[in-house]
Length: 81
Ligand code: HEM
Image 1 (cartoon, protein in one colour):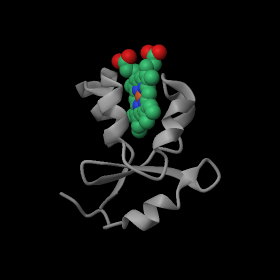
Image 2 (tube, rainbow, N blue to C red):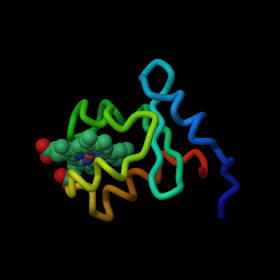
Image 3 (tube, protein in one colour):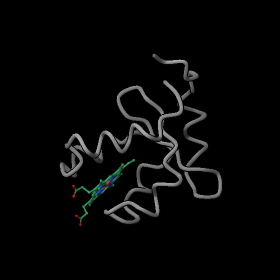
Image 4 (cartoon, rainbow, N blue to C red):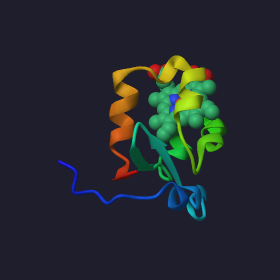
């Protein structure tokens, strides 16, 4: 199912601003969430995860532990770590 490219952690880390694009990782997937940032119900906090992993933040904010949130995230998948 994955014809998506493998993307390194170093490449993800280069994408941490709206200008360069905002990429995050979650459970081995890489996501380009640039277009989602402005729509995030939790506001600018989402930028704390830019260029890195969502897990530590989603552990803290359990509101993300719902199917509809994961479905939303899946729309933005661009690769695998
Ligand atoms: C709320 C998505 C990253 C903090 C939400 C909600 C969604 C969402 C859908 C509303 C959930 C509901 O009420 O049912 C996402 C996605 C993210 C992301 C797709 C990454 C791609 C983050 C990060 C943080 C964060 C990294 C914190 C550092 C929050 C907070 C709320 C929230 C505090 C609650 C807002 C409120 O109800 O007042 N997020 N989120 N989110 N998010 Fe995120």
